[in-house]
Amino acid sequence: MQQTQEYDYIVVGAGSAGAIVASRLSEDRNCTVLLVEYGGSDRSVFIRMPSALGIPMNSKKYNWGFESAPEPHLNNRRMNCPRGKVLGGSSSINGMVYVRGHAGDYDEWEACGAVGWNYQNCLPYFKKLESHQCVASEYAGSDGPVAISGGNNMRNPLYRAFIDAGVEAGYAETEDYNGFRQEGFGQKFMTVDRGVRASTSHAYLNPAKSRRNLTLLKHAMVTRVVFDEKTATGIECDVRGKMQMFTARREVILCAGAIGSPHLLQVSGVGPEKVLQAAGIKVVHDLPGVGENLQDHLEFNFQYRCKQPISLNSELGLFKKALIGAQWLLFKTGLGRTNHFESCAFIRSRAGVKWADIQYHFLPGAITYDGKVAFKGHGFQVHVGHNKPTSRGHVRAMSADVKQHPEILFNYLETEQDRQGFRDCVHLTREIMRQPAMDAYRGEVIQPVAEVQTDDQIDAFVRESVDSAYHPSCTCKIGVDAMAVVDAELRVRGVKNLRVIDSSVFPTIPNGNLNGPTMMVAERGADIIKGCTEPAVTMAVYTDPQWHKRQREGTPLRAL
Image (cartoon, rainbow, N blue to C red; front, top):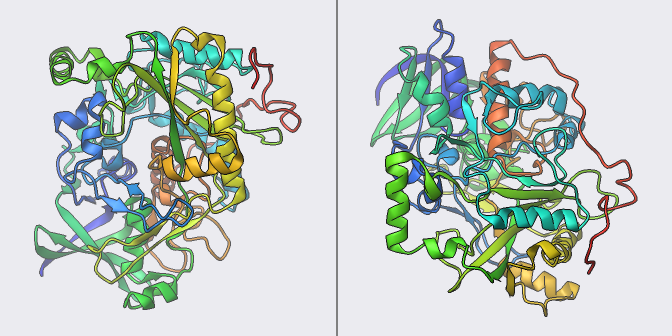
């Protein structure tokens, strides 16, 4: 064991949250910050080029490669759970979709015991991180580190057709789903900066790396948090095969994500006593909620043949891909500069639902997650998922060795409410896609086939076809109840000098992709540590005044 080195703060994980926390804390030149990351450089062209997103997501070099236990309500399928193992973490391998969630999601957090985490308190931090290139309003940030763009701004006519179909189905068009009105159809935004992925490594670490008070340690696996009784004093770390100790004069801050943070707490002796004892881990502090309350989004694809030769399917041959790559390398233009999800929608599943709980991503191609054509010929697909699940899972250490992956069980679709949510997804999507705006493009439906009609048939299709949207969260939740892991200032309950700042602290999962909310939590968490939080604002958000009576405001031109 090498000699111990001391820092004021030790941040574990240089991902969506950790890169921000380390960057913001190191703005104070009077404190020293150590940022520890197991992965390496994010300079690969496949990370930086937005359209290549399927490559790093499926790479063992950049992805931890987590997998769930057999899911009992999904035909015992094991589900992929990719997490970033690289500078920028999951922001370097994700789909770059930028969604804040609905204001109601954050008011829900406060109602769950996360005092001070309501929408009016969180909004300044969304604005603080954004440099929005498509929206100029009091709801959007304009000078933050993270560029928010529109890719190629819906040049393909299929994007617009999807929006028009939603309007014909009785839904509103919204200019900014992150602003006053989430509910409706409109353009989608992405974390892309002048054609380059705007990960937190790109946006926060690159400008901060030259600071003398910030030390970045790569290829280092944190094996445990070190405690003196119930006070965190530092970390033990495997650095390229050599064990080292690092001491934190002030705090250790875990930013290892919804899988990594609870797992590291558990192998360090903080977690449910029965789980720790079963894994052979010495108990430092019995904290029942660590690793519990796991939540995620599911989605599946509606796929259609396209009657016109305008889809992305014609661009996926090796020669076309080479041309796309060359154009991007030389000019940062063309199809390489976008994630291809350029239109979207948020709708409510039924009357009585107060804010949107169904999300759509439209793709002008029929493509698998690894970037392959789903079928021969032209096609398009719309990703749809029910985003407010009530099912709950867990993350549990299997041994004291942090290198052994934990047991991950999402328990997807355990509840009838969640199963009904996906039935609603099927019925409502079919109605949207049969509107006149899609007539010129909509060919044969590939999935789900027309014969899938009854509840039992839909349930069977969903169990077989649904995939994770890769949004694990909520395993170290903020709160005051017995299952809460951190308090409203993100301090681990029952121990000292230890915080968690990442998506694991969400009490409930927001309606949308999670990179935006995770960055917001990191920005606010850093300010909490520094003792200088932004004041709350008062901003109105749209809610259908008749939400308790109707599922949407208008009447579809073609009803089911």
